[in-house]
Structures are given as structure tokens and as C-alpha cells.
Length: 460
Image 1 (cartoon, helix red, strand yellow):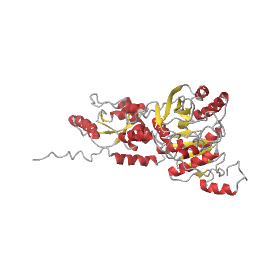
Image 2 (tube, rainbow, N blue to C red; image 1 turned 180 degrees about the vertical axis):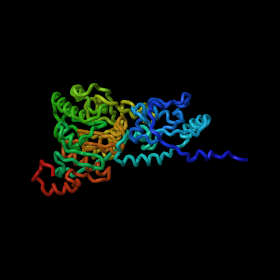
Image 3 (tube, one colour; image 1 turned 60 degrees about the vertical axis):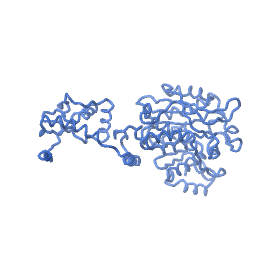
Image 4 (cartoon, rainbow, N blue to C red; image 1 turned 45 degrees about the horizontal axis):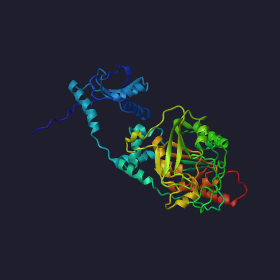
């Protein structure tokens, strides 16, 4: 039995690329492939990121053989000319058959999930000038693949409800290493010992960049000393700023911080703030002057009630605002990639009786669980995006940003919490914190200990 030989005269044909005015190209009227607006937008994003690297294929009359979605994308980008290869050697029947084959054969390839994730990991570690979605995969798809697939995500979501976290603590009697004005870089993450109410702190932390998400746990204005503890075994002082405030004082604090974090966020970015029931009204009144509207109120349902008299507190509110301008991001997409989310989030809090609980309570009296923060980050940010926390505390938001492949930027007023955060993040990232002076955190600690009391209020 003989088999037909390939048309060798066509292989290696002199195929030249020419720049053709876009209006000269004619779509094939009987093209069997439809292209949604979303698909065309994806192609346009790829062209915008990498350039027009694949020419359109047409016949000698400039009727399209392959590249209909590309042509639509080029038109949406306002391109005047496009690169074209003319396939004049194909017969009418061959053109029809090649159109079908060109689309169908691309569908038949199968992704190797492990190798695909390995390729994305290369991009995680690179300094990219483009969005990950220029690859044709959505952020939600990539995040889920990176987390092991839909089943792994569901298992992780259940495990997160009872996640056990511990915090490495500094010597409680030691003088803080950090000082106001300090800036530390740990891998891609930034920590600043600064004030959420001061423009200079944001300039130092962000260096002109803008956040894709601002996620913070502002002080609620209530007392900490004598209220946040492990049945008396752990004692906390009041916050440097934000404890024992009147309604007007709390509104002033939140309003100033919100205005600055909104100004340093991208248009359409979400600004998300935790609150308890006592502070909820004051925070909404303050934020009403900053944001166009309150987009949503979510609930963090804890797995164990806290201290209380009649009803033990087992929830906190999460106020969700959107910065004016720009398009907001939705990576959940009604659970299409396996991350099914409601507006009630159930995660263990630090008041849960579990291993590490006392360490968490000692680290920070209102410490939020990293899995909760990580899921919020995954919901609304691009891969590699900037997550800003202007009331950073012990650094849980920065850890969550690291776990999700985002960049964490934290501002914290209290130097002892900056020290806790730096050491936690160093351990997680596996790299030393580098001060703006070029010294490591440990080198700075040794130097400042040797000169204790000499320049206590100025960064070395």
C-alpha cells in the first residue's frame, strides 16, 4: 500500500513578510471559528506585551487564511499596518483545508501541568514588564495551577480554616533595632518604619509605584492593655497610636491613612480594611470622604469566640472599598477555576486554642491569619502585583503576599513590630533584610546596640 507524499515543493517556499495596511486585509466570510471580545482582548494583550511576532497569513488577494483574531486585536490596538505572509502557492481547496487544520491541530496539544507551572515559576522570579495574563492564561487559572489544581485548592481551603501559625519572637527585653525612617528590602518585599498618616512614609515605601491592593487592619480606637491577652498570661501595651480614641479621633486617624493609601493605589484597586463592630461606623464615616462608595462588607468568622461578657466575639467585619477610576480585578469568576468564595470567610483566629497560640498573641494582639489574607490577595490582585499594608503590625500581610507570588509593602509605626515582621519575613523568604544603608538587619542590630542611646531617633 502506498501513502501520499507531502507536497515537497511547498516546504521551504520563499515566504516573505510584508507590511500591509490593515484596511487592505479581508476576513474570510465563511471562517468557522468565532472569536469573543474576551479572546480578542487576550490576543491584544499578548501583542502589546511582546509585539507582533506572528504574521497574519493571507492569499494573494489578501483574504485571510489564518489570523482572524489577530486582525481584530490589531484593529483594537489602532495599528495602521500589520506583518503578512502571502501563501500564493495554495489552491482554493488547500486554503480551506489549511484554515481548518491550523485551528484544529492547535487544539490537540496537551499541557504538562508540572512543566507549565515550572515555566510560570521562572516568570515569578523575573522582573517582568508585562502582566502574566499576556500568556493567555488568566490570573485565577495560574494561581490555581500553582497551588496544585482544583482539588488541592479545595483541600487547602478546608485546611486553612484550622491553620496553625507560629511567630518567631525577639527578646522582649531588647531595645528595638528599627527606627523611624528605616526602609528594609527582603527579596521583593519592602518594610518601612513609618507613619500611615504621613506622605513621606509612602514615598519611602513605594518609590513612585502604586498598589494593586491596600489591605490593612487599622487600630480600632479601643484599649489594648488589659484587654488583648491569653487569659492574663500575655500582656500588651496600648498601640503607639490608635488606642483609647474618641470617635472623632478615630475618624481622623482612619481618614488620613485611607486618603493616602487610596492616592497610592491604582485606579480600580480595592482597599480592604478590617474592623470590629465598635469601630465600624466611625471607619465608614471616615472612608465616606475618601472612596466613591462602600462596595461590600465581608465577615471573618472565627472558629472560636474571643473574650467577652454576654456574647463572645467570633467575627470581624471587612470593609471593601474601590479606588475611583480604572478597572477592578476579579480572579474568582464565580469559582470557574476552583476557588469558590462567599462573603463569609471562616478561618481560625489567634484566640483559638492550638499550638503556637501564645506565640501569636505575644507577637501582636490583633494578628490576622495568613491564609485569610492570602485568599483576599488571590481574589483581586495580579500575579506580581503590589500589596500595601499601612498598619503592618507583625507582617502577616507581607507573608501572605510572599506565599501568593505578590510583592508586599508594609508601613508600621512601632519599631518593635517592625523588628518582629523583618525577622518573620526573613525566615519565610530565606533572604536577609537589607537596610537602605546597605547593611543587613543583623549588621544594623549589632551596630546600633554598640551605639545605643547616641542617635536613638535617627536612622543609621
